[in-house]
Image 1 (tube, rainbow, N blue to C red):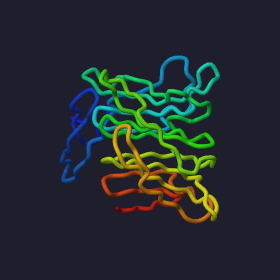
Image 2: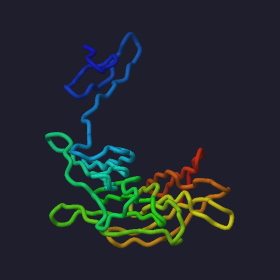
Image 3: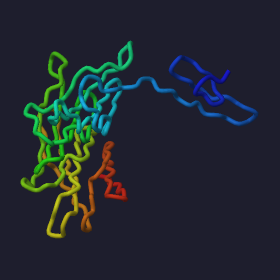
Image 4: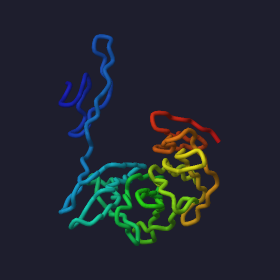
Length: 232
């Protein structure tokens, strides 16, 4: 019988309805129910909690770039692991030397146990790469910056990682033509990453690199109100 939250399908558990039912020749798709709700607890302001999210297998990362504690910027990213008891928060990520107003957690990405966090809101933005140590605690193993220091480029506004390629959006990058935006491609693993390519946007005030995604040799870059698909 159809159950709560299901459309023409069977409720197979307290948190999920699955399957397809033949209703007079019409196939109705199942409507999934939420498996869990992740929330920020404690006395922290919830500013932009969940502004960026990423998931890979049993690990999820939630960015909270505007979280404050006692009126001070305390932006962070939170790591969750799916266990037999549901999704459990296992760690709060921050750089070793937090910078006020850095918007750490504005962008997040994950592949395997490698977590990437963008912090774009400083004169020069930064991107942090985290990996777990032998005790399973994530540590910042690399810090990436724009190769144009001193520019307010919003480096780290978007991040994506796939198979040894790490893409970083810098939508306020400037050139002789004005604010064109760029995407930086880094290659490597662990604590060793090197810049392999800088893809420049085009047109004034472009916002090129505001959002992006990468899968294998394919890179999708968003310029404000446009999307560009690139293939290596």
